[in-house]
Image 1 (tube, one colour):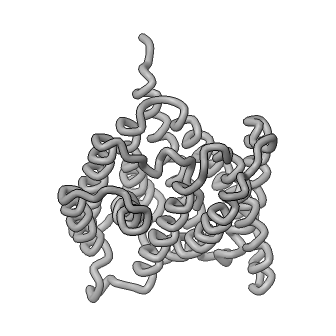
Image 2: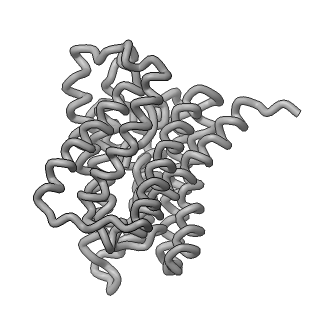
Length: 300
């Protein structure tokens, strides 16, 4: 039986979310033993090699970044560098499902930011969905509650930087290859954190950490590859909601690897954020607006 393009796209999206969440799990396993900046550099060095080969195979190096796009690529890269630090720092101190649930607010924040800064249309239904989604985020973060920490704020800061990244990506012209932009970002992250890591005491890398670094680099590379493949098949409006399967993976892996299970209020908040995000994506599809999933894989 032939598989439709939409079904292929949905399966690839779920595979992408699984790969990225597995990457997060492996990184979390190492954060207690190895400084975060050292991990980012070492992972970046391995991932950049793989991404370089993929970019070469895709012919990305034969393209160029349009002059008008260079400032947006620079802004996107800087935002990604900052988002990576805040996300992984929060990940090292928070349950995997909690930080993943906070990240699910990204489509809501992006829709609001696009209306405020890019002049995109903004109806009352989307506004209601965003407000409800933010209520869900507050249930996850619960400021003032006993379990609240500064790392919950780090997670929100990461969302803000990823929003800047995606807004910058929306400003890129179509003549700039997305894979080339991905390669530039991975190289920049590796170089920046290579310099920053010289200011910390490096931890020795045991056989366990070396294996986990290899696995995390392989999983994030698979996430990149599947994300690129998603853009080539299926309709965005159909495949986009399947990005929320990442939360299911985070729940399962957090319980399996770390014995973590979110509190009922956190689960309720995650459900509210997911429902609001799916509705926002649905509204964007109905009105013909672009979603951030059209612009290439996430990097974190």
